[in-house]
Length: 345
Ligand code: SAH
Image (cartoon, rainbow, N blue to C red; front, side, top):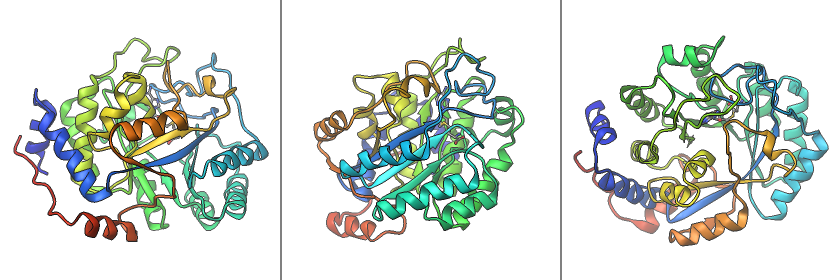
C-alpha cells in the first residue's frame, strides 16, 4: 500500500470497508482459525525508563516479583496440560536472569515439552545472548519497535535509541527466529503520519508476528494523565497491518481487551487479528505486572467462547509463522480464491 492510501484509511470516518477487507484477507491467508498462546509474565523488574510503562525502573510503588526457574517450569507445565503449543515468556528488561539462566530455561522447556514453541519477549539483550537463546531452542522473539518515529522514540525511551532496537530486529531474524514487531497506537506526541510510517515499516519488514496495542496510561508513570486513543483507530491499524502482511500472526492485544472489555477482542478478531494470548501468569503475580492501569487477563474458557462467537475455530497447536510453513500452502489450496482486492479509500 502507498503512503496516501494508508493515510486516507487512517483518517476515514467510515472504516467498515477497511475492517471487512482485513477480515477477508485474514480468512484467505490464515484460515478461519484463531491461534492460542500461553503467556507467562515471569518478572516485572526492569532496568529501562520507558515513560509509558508501569514497569519502568523509577516506579517505586510497584511491588516487584521474579519467578524462579521451577515456578516458570510449573507454569509451562500447566500450559502443556491445556494442550497449548506455544509459551510466550515475557518480562521487563531484567538482567538478573543471566544468559545462562534464560538458556537453561529454554533448554529445559524444550526437553520436557519437545513440541512446544518458545517465544521470548524479554527486551534488549546482547547479540550473544540472542544467539545463546536460539542455540538452546528458542523459536520466536517479540521485540516491538513501539514507534518508528526516531525523535518520539528517543523522547519516550530515555537512554535508548530506535536504531539499536532495529539493529536487534535484523539480527534476530538472521539468527533464524520468527520475529515480532509492532507499535503502540495513541502515544502522547504521536501523529497520524507516524502511524502511517509504522504501517509502512511493517509492510517493509514483513514480520512473522505483529503486536499492535493502544496506549493506556499507568497511574505511576509521567504519562498518567494522558488519554487513550479510540478503539476505532487501533482496529484500523490492525486491519492495515493485516492487509500489508497478509499472513503475519497478529494477536488481539490484552490492551485492546482492556480498552473495551465487552467488544475489544471480538472486534480485533474480525478486523484482521488471528491470535489470542491467554494468561498463565500466577494469579498472585498478575496485579503486579502493571504495564498500564486496569490491565485485564484472558482465561482459556473465555478465549474459546469468543473464538466460536466470531465463527472461528481455535487452534492450540504451535502455530508457527505462516510465512514459511506448510500451513500457508494448505490455507491457500484449501480456500483457493484469489486475494481480496484492496478497496480505494
Ligand atoms: N521488556 C520487554 C517487554 C515489555 S512489556 C520489551 O521491551 O520488549 C510488553 C509491551 O507492553 C511493550 O513492548 C509495550 O508495547 C507494551 N506497553 C508497555 N506499556 C504500555 C502502555 N502504557 N500502554 C500500552 N502498551 C504498553
